[in-house]
Image (cartoon, rainbow, N blue to C red; front, side):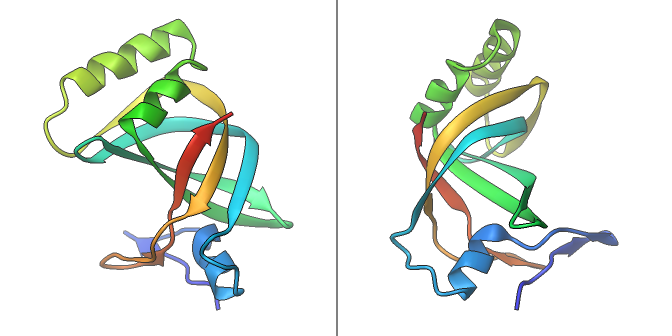
Length: 135
């Protein structure tokens, strides 16, 4: 059964990574998304970033959590418009702990993803995807 996260009365779509894992997809699974639109990026650790987006897949809305390194972020910024790239680079240069940045324009990227490890947060369980390559 898919788990739906809730925060402050909001319902979130089922997590796609957890859905795949619950369906028996092997942990070595890889997938490709050729057009994702990122509107924010969060810093969640030293040289570790994440973003969450909702996508219609298989006729149903799902939530995707994408984790990626600073090197992958650098590759993503090669696809960004110059204003967004400069803004994000300045943001990363001044990071001190957890933070989030809203992007002035959506960043469109293609990526190869691997399933990450199951995460148990306070009010939800999810399986992030790890960005292995920017296409």
